[in-house]
Structure formats: structure tokens, C-alpha cells
Length: 493
Image (cartoon, rainbow, N blue to C red; front, side, top):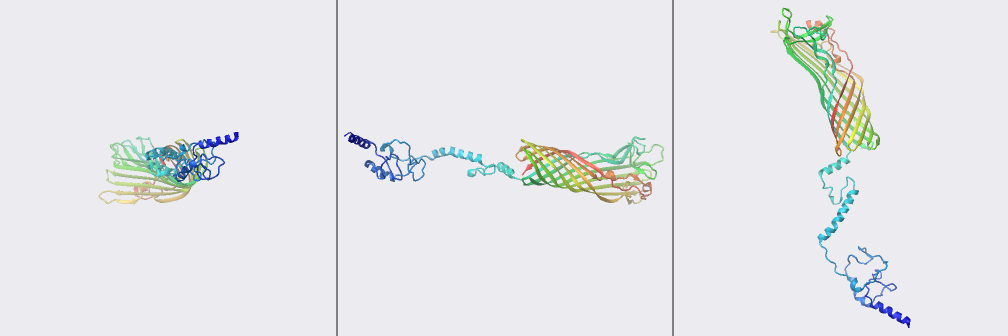
């Protein structure tokens, strides 16, 4: 009896509960009771079950066969049975576009930030926003990808004083401008002895390409403007005497060709009125092709081996022109001497380049030596124009210092040229550096004008126009160096 009462109570409890929504056996519905087969349902829920199968799917469906947002697992944890009246679906509420945008915008921003954080410098973010970015941004990325570089530097270099024989002398009025210096009449060398070196401008270009991780090729061009010294004077000797000094091999003593001289009162020697001008000029330029091999790289520092081809061009010239008039005879003498020397170096180079970076600052050094052949070519020419009006002028080849030594002479000799460069750079932006440096180059076995001038002159040439054994030509090697400050701009493109 007790058992029957318990069963009746259980059935009454189940019947009094809410109807349970269910689906197919493959879709186990929330509220299914354990132990019932696939056709088990309560007849109160029959109507709802038919409608439920036809209802549209929506977020939160418990259907497991298809993947929906909010799908529930097949085996649910202990779940409280709800009344069927509370489980019935309601019609979905329409969502405005503004609300959708408000919901999605933070998610899109988060996705974009993550994409940018993981993106390489050269990639484009979703939506093409980077492709439509600023021009400078695209240029900057392009420069970061590039393997090319180019630098240009303004040079403020100077050459040393160059040795030269005394070429123009002056002295007090009514005295002969004849060496030695400081003698009677305060004789001075106005031009020659030491030709002054001065600051010259120039430019240097360096460009190249990185072929591989450890090897680069490049080229270098530099040019220094003419470094010159000049002198000119004219007069009748009333202010100072002017002459062109030489050593007279006939008299075995110092002498001078008079340009301007006023004789003392009562003298029977002639007075001279005239003018003289002289100019010495030297110019340099170079071209190089080289390769760089990286030997070591450690924490912002690198050491490279450099080697390649070098060409140097060193030109030195001298021009002297004088005109003198004998006031007693009206004889006019116009004399010109010209010396032109070309030095052409072709050879190889080898050295080291060291660079160290710290933040935006860069310090570097370049030390190398150039070894090869120096071709020396010397051209000497002169002219002597003599006239006694009203007669026509006569012209003969050869000046005062260019007589028997006229012509072209050349030879080849071994030469070397060590070079040192120190540079400090500051990066004003990525791939753009401003630099300040110091350069020094020494050239060995160079032919210069001061070494080929022979100041010994045969007196027969001056008096009679007959060339003698002097002046003569002979090669004599010298050396030259240049140094200065470099201001530069380096761009990696």
C-alpha cells in the first residue's frame, strides 16, 4: 500500500510540473529526463514541439549538430528544469546599425593594434591604411630596405708651402735687385723661395652598394680647387727696383735681368721701366673603386678590410712674364717662361675601415695606403721678344729660365700615398647623417715645378741670343701632402 502511494505521488509530481521542450534524439533538449526513449514526451508539450522544429535559428540555440555561437555541450552539468512557459522563445529584437558599430569598433581597434605590433616594418596593415599613409613613411621604409649609400662632403683643405728658387727680387731705389737677400739695398725675394700654400675648397663623393651581408662595392671621387700663389709689380724704379734673379755661369756670380731701376744721379747706366707678373698653381683630383669585406661586427662596431684601384692626378704649373723698356735706347724686351707638370698615379689600395655606433652618434676611421706607378710629365717652354723701335720685333724660342731645357720630358717611377681619415657623424633622422672629419694624404715621388727649374743661365744667351749649356733639365723627385677638414652629408638610399 505504501509502495502504491509513493508511485502515485511521483506521477502527480511529474504531471504538475511544466511541459518539457524537446527535439530529435540527436538534439538532446534542455529538460530531457533520463531514461526516456526518442519518442518520449508529455502530451501537453506536443504542440510546442511541432512549432519548435519550425522556428528560426537564433543566437543561443541549443542545437548541437550545427556550430552556433552559444551551442551547449551534449552533457550538461546539473541543470534545473524550467517550466515550459518560461522556455518558450521570444521574437528577436532588431538591433540598430549604430549599436552594431559601437560594439564592433573597439574590437576592430584591438585587432588593428595587435596586427601593427606583430607586423614587420615593411608590411601593410589590414584595410590598406598603411599603403595610404604619409609620403615620408613610405620613403623611410624604402630607405630601410635599401642596400645603397651615398655621401657628399665639402672640403676645406690646404697644401704646404712649396719650395721654389727665388724668381722675383726687389730692393731699395737706385740699388740692384741682386741676391743674396739682405745685402746692399735690402734685397728681398718678392716671389719664389717658398710659394705659399693656402686653403682651397673642394668636394668628395662616396657611393656604393651592399652586395651581400659581408661584402660591398663602392666608388669615390674627390677634387680640390686650385691652390695658387701670385705676384705682380710695375714701376720705373723710383719706389723700388725690380729684377729677375739668376746665376750667371759666365761671371760665376749672382746676376739679375732688370725690369725696373732708377740709377743714381751721375750714373751712365740706363734706367728701366717695366712690369712683371708670376703665378704658381697646383691642383689635385682622385678617383677610386673599392671593395669592402666585413671582418668583424660586435655590438654596434664593425671592422672592414678595404681594397681596390686608385687614380690620382697632381698638376703643378708656373708662369712668369716680364716686360722692360730701356729708357735710353727704347729697347723693349718681353720674356715669358712656362713650366707645366702632370703627375698621374695608377695603382692599388689596401687598408681598414672601423666604425662605432652609439645611439645617434657614429665615429669612424679610414686608414689605407695606395701603391703603384707615378707617371711624371714635364713641359717647359719660353719665348723672348726683342724690339728696338721703329724696327720690327724679333722673336726667339726660350725665355730666361727656359732655354736649352725646353721640351717635354716624362718618366715612370714607383710611388706610395698613405691616407688617414677620421670622422664623427650624427644621425638627424633614419638613414641621414651629418659628418665632421679630418683628412690627411701624403704623396711620395711627385715632380714639382720648384724641383725642375734651373736658375743657372749662360750670359751669351742674354747678350747675344746664343743658347749655352745652361739652363738644363733634370728630374728631381719631391713629395706633397694635403690636409684639411671635411663637412659632409651621408644618405642611405
